Length: 182
Image 1 (cartoon, one colour):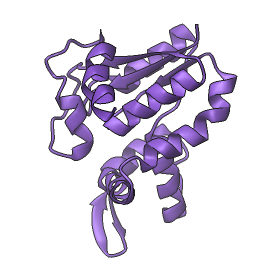
Image 2 (image 1 turned 90 degrees about the vertical axis):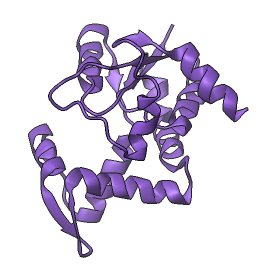
Image 3 (image 1 turned 60 degrees about the vertical axis):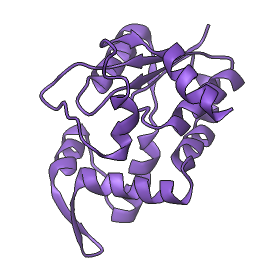
């Protein structure tokens, strides 16, 4: 059966590391909800990082955009937040429409950045639509980048802090989020 694994966790909890393991060992392909935010931001800035090192440097660097001084990470978060103010499901819907062709062309998909209830719903809906088995796995590895903060993108992951690193939280997250939206 084809699979979608969505990783849930706070900053620095090992989501990207786990995604890389699944890519290497399980033949998964990685797609993320934040891919759309980044592409949108690169268009705004008329710049795109050439590689992951340049991207990581961007996230911690200070930039000025329309008179506002922000780190790169804050810039990405603020653009994402502004679009969510217009429609809480904006990025989840964007992700879903962008991935239709990818769902048809891949058997194993990992999503390393499931952060909002709307994204959980989109994973469930698209997985069912394209006949994928889906799982939500909690990442709670405390790396040097591990961070608990009050940004709204971290709230959902923080609700599951009592769960173990690598734990399948599909039933928990479905009961809490999917069933609440019915």
